[in-house]
Image (tube, rainbow over all chains, first blue to last red; front, side, top):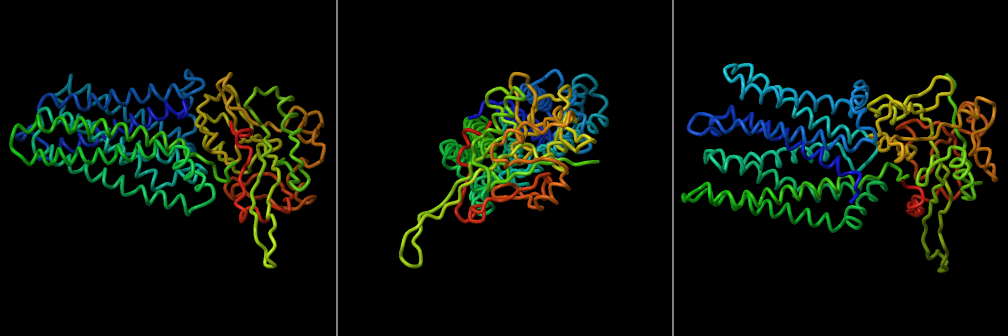
Length: 289
Length: 208
């Protein structure tokens, strides 16, 4: 594992988790199926707060990637052509709207309409952030960072990590229907992630000499991490289906759901971390020079 | 605006790496930083011919590459701080060190490995075409040092008239991506390099 990539792994994963959590929370606020007997419980306030804390943590991680952290503000200087500049801008805007929403639900809860505007804008910026984060990589001459795969990879990470954090919240006091819906969403995401693996490997194998070098790094040099990640992905799926099966029985739902969700969370986080290690490890610039 | 560039005669390059060392010496580069790199491209097979005899089919040559001061440099476009820029006088891609925050994004944006991270200073570094030498009418140190006279420099239009307009040799990236300002005289074995599955053999030496 390359030590210099740790801040980038932390930044991308935490910011995607933050964006995914806020977007799913936003959906939950609007859909009746996610409410507990028709209203949002007071403790749900901690969900956007968690998203905000995750976002701030992501920014802290990103600082450690820089050779000159004190000059970080200069990274906004090239919005006209650099996706990295745009990514940082969207991250700051996302944090602003997320943070403002959190402040309002704790201190200005009577301003309901404005709160919803801030939440919706925050969620929209979360989606834009994930998109811009994928463009940061896909606009480079690195065949392994294929545009569609990279965007889907980042989006799936956002939903999987944000979703599992939300499910952890829901196992405490959330409605059964909400838990069931979210568990199914996560199961579908994990299935799609696993299904995408052979397609991606085939793309690397058939695309170019450079992408074949990336494939070699992935399966030979980092083969252990690749298979560990695959094992964690399968285990995530197993635990999520265990949670879904437990939800079908009627005995003490929350307790029965909690342990498979905790296990699934651990597996997801480990699979996403190992996936991100692989993402940065397979960099071979076009031509291989 | 004038546009300067390099000429590389890969058929003449012996891989002695004098250019690499001269560059390091002139610019006082720390170990691990190579503004000019000599890639050893190598590949081949032991094949049975049509007459039943066996012969070696080899593709081995050296490729000396620095910054190509591209017409459409991906590093300049990607740099979030505008520290990288294309200067007016000779069309060189240079770094404003005060603006560089050391994010290393340009490193990925360059398909030629030109951008090198200076760990001690926390910023990126790259070939500046020995612009101080150019100002006093001298050649860049790599060009001046080459014992095989495999390197040359000048305005790209003049280089093209002198040496032709070949801008690509295996395994370099497609020149349409960044429009590198260089002219290449290809080594004869470059023709079979792709079919011989030739690769950079000295990765450990040239990769940062």
